[in-house]
Image (cartoon, rainbow, N blue to C red):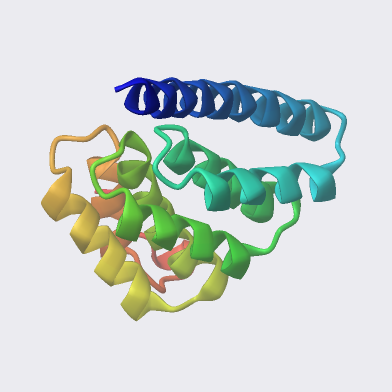
Length: 154
């Protein structure tokens, strides 16, 4: 009986340490990000997601990585990898909705793969028809591949 209690106490201790390490890692990553040490922040965020894939923070961190690669490093194809990971591994997370829309946007406006863009916008509209972004997704779908002069503004 004492052996079982010792194992239980040890397990609870390890779980408690993991939660504390979660927060410490994320705080350090955020600090590095704020200091514009993007390489270090990316390494820490990646480590976190690999180490704690079941954490409720994992989809949020993946979305943060996508934003860094897309917005700051201007590497849309790298951002796509993180967004697709969110869709695949965390389909019910709040980040999944934004990921679907952003995937459509990146494929349409950066990569110029209109077939993929259409696929993601349609998935977005099927899953989130009442979202604030639904109007934007419909607009994007109607105007895929069109130049600025040919965009429909009805």
